[in-house]
Amino acid sequence: MSRPVPKIVKARVTPILISDPPLLNVLGVHQPYTPRTIVELETDTGATGVGETYGDTEYLRVARALAEAVVGKPVTALNGLSELAYSAAQLTDDGEEFDPAGLRGRRTPEKTVRSVVSAFEVASLDALGKELGLPVHALLGGKIRDRVDYSAYLFYRWAEHPEADAPRDDWGAALDPDGVVRQAQRFADTYGFRSFKLKGGVFEPDAEIEAIKALAKAFPGMPLRLDPNGGWSVETSVRVAEELADVLEYMEDPTTGIDGMAEVRRRTGALLATNMCVTTFGEIPEAFAKDAVQVVLSDHHYWGGLTATRELAAVCRTHGVALSMHSNTHLGVSLAAMTHVASVVDNLDFACDSHRPWQTEDVVTRPHTFVDGALEVGDEPGLGIELDTDALAALHERWVRREDMHDRDDVAAMRKADPSWTQPPLPRW
Ligand code: GKR
Ligand code: MG
Image (cartoon, rainbow, N blue to C red; front, top):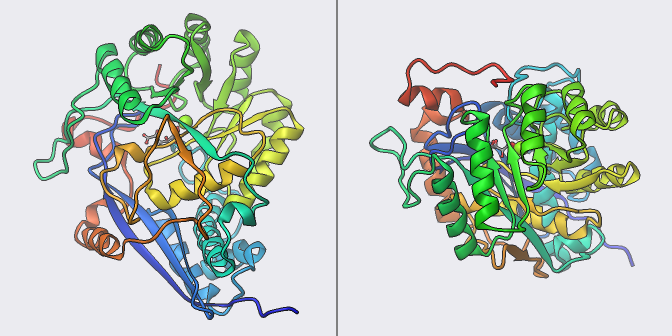
């Protein structure tokens, strides 16, 4: 006997600001607060679902438009979400690029739409799972692993933000190899992480080579990655690859562009991963044909959601390219979504990375805890999380107050400490 498909009767989009430490990267430093968007859906059967995505102004505009457009649609109508978002937000998929130097690769309307759709897709799957009493991984075909490995995400950082009223933590500064090793040790002791990614592109390449060598000495045999976000020329990338050939698991986006990455690969044979030069399906044919990347790091937000991540996994498998996941500043809703999709992808060949340990706040009532560097894949209905509505309201209230932080701007944040700082042209070294 068939039953009617639940329809979406309410869609709420809540912009929030979450506190973030002064983590350094090639563009500058994280602001004290990072914008995120939380999407809540409710069906006519009373099921609710939650999703999370980027929160900068343009994402928020599209999310608000899509929230109006999904009301009345079946909660299962996931394949129509993109088209609905384009028309609701009056955008076209013309491939136009508006910020080529971003840390998330090319920025286009397509990626904005996909990032927003991902939050609605995740919220729909969460609601549908709750309706059916099934976990999200079951809706994606069922988990094939009970635990998902994550790597520690190490950052050069200051002890505190320059602003007197900014949030603080007790991690201290990490600005040299000793500081990086200390930070890695705390990650290993607290969460049991057994692989480490260092965000590079901050100091001269030789200093970052020394930091990786220090990590290799402190954690012998553990997988290490270095990610300068495209901060190096081909020549510098080749030199770093040669210096660190024995200790790096892979290099992540050493340089920018498909041709540059392909040349580094040709000249060194090093394994190259990316979350910058292959970030859409349209970029895949050329990159794979030129052997520019051997590991694609999905971001389920800008690839368009959990189903799209599975499609990406299939394309990668077909071409013998590995898949894993990178992250940006995020909370427990995105972490739950990452963990569910990671549990169903067979060719997830490397530990994913997560910023989550850097966050002191969350919008879920039971924040995840990494044990032995991994998260259990739960079997509770939906994503297996519960929204903390008081926390959501407080973080939204902060968003209302702090208009100056509505867009992530690592360059502007760096200028607070160094008024002469401008966005560095990539490659920087
Ligand atoms: O938070 O500074 C940062 C990172 O650079 C972040 O933007 C991402 O993790 O996309 C980045 C990456 O993995 O390269
Ligand atoms: Mg990266």
